[in-house]
Length: 311
Ligand code: NAD
Ligand code: UDP
Image 1: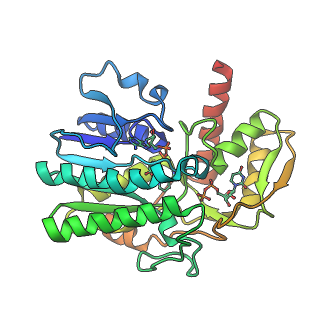
Image 2: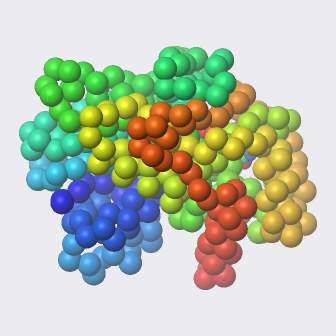
């Protein structure tokens, strides 16, 4: 198949491109390089089945493909809050453009949605049936509400135009190829620990997250795209939940770092707790994550150590 991956030069997108090429598909990787990097996909540039397109999805584009994975959107709070209006445009106008493309060429389209649609959840763990608790006017809203509208657009193009859609709600994912300055917690803590800098713990560190290794996530995304008779939304994430403080301590121990953990102000609207209920993914996709936090963190630490050794 010919498969379009928007945001293909980003963290998750680059792993997805690699898997799809490995399965024998032709891959069109589209990216505006806002948070993505050529370094993430440079090793495919000589491959005749790989094509790189510099483009911004807020502008229309004509392409002929069988599948669209729509991942283009900054995912780290630092980056999606840098230009919040652009973040909304990317989720709203970008998703309309990709849905228009899918409709025209009758491609199946998968939207990378997020656990952020649940906001600061009052139901724990979060099942897909929960409608969420999102502040519509806060500093995270450009991302959360943008992704919620993107889900609405997917459903309406499906109901109104019969577009073949899939929606996955991705929970916190980590792994090699996160950018050094990505700003999310896993890369921040590892980079700080490896460089002997203070570990920036926001708040008292009692807030929780559940971290999924990128290979497990990509497996779930492909299963969802290729399953029949189920459009989602479906949660994809690892249900093993940790406090952020536990997480900081684990990274310090695993890197043998002398870094100190220092408290910083908690950003506003930071969700208190987050854990996916993955019953639906288990039942409908036969999917669950396999990579333990220790194994995944070891691979990620080794990756960042390699980046610093090269520099
Ligand atoms: P990332 O920032 O590494 O990747 C996003 C990619 O999209 C980058 O390559 C960026 O340059 C590109 N991009 C941004 N705006 C664009 C635009 N207007 N046009 C074209 N390209 C654009 O982030 P990621 O972690 O790889 O996330 C990928 C997708 O998965 C995002 O949609 C994100 O919302 C979603 N997601 C990720 C996580 C996670 O924990 N990593 C969790 C939930 C959802
Ligand atoms: N966090 C932290 N230190 C950092 C970056 C993030 O303590 O340097 C915390 C952040 O406040 C949040 C959690 O780690 O509670 C996860 O943050 P991230 O930005 O990775 O993802 P999200 O909040 O979008 O789940």
